[in-house]
Length: 197
Image (cartoon, rainbow, N blue to C red):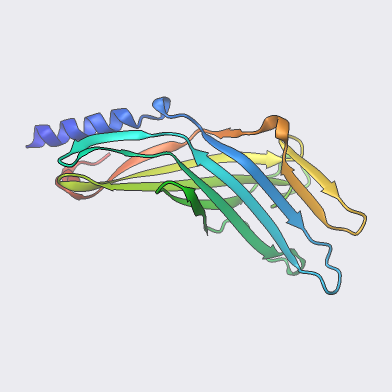
């Protein structure tokens, strides 16, 4: 019994080793900062789209072969910059566009430019994704995490209107941005409870 459990997770760990995974792809990123004029919306807007292109096979079940499919998610955030409301370091749930994964995004501080962190011009994005599957005798979950930095000096473009609002977006010549994820296998229930990474 112990040997069967060990071989099961040896096989699973081998399948999801980071060296065998394709990078995630950030294909779209867009931000908007308002001008603050009377009668206008005060919300800054942030949008990012990310894809996990990997299909990860799992051990066969009694109902046949199973795998974690590729997934795509859209992530959005809004905040009021004029009252110093901060979008940093908050877990933002993302809406799945394709697939079953559970995605979350976090905007983190960076300072590549030397002018201080900015959630629209100089920041790091951290993405987390969970995928879970019911197998023959238990339930397994994969926890992924990946980070990528963005700044006007590296991969963002900017346009500011005379009226005061500004937009930034992912430089089309540098899209997609590739994120190398780290993955951890977690046993949620069943015969794998005695196995620890």
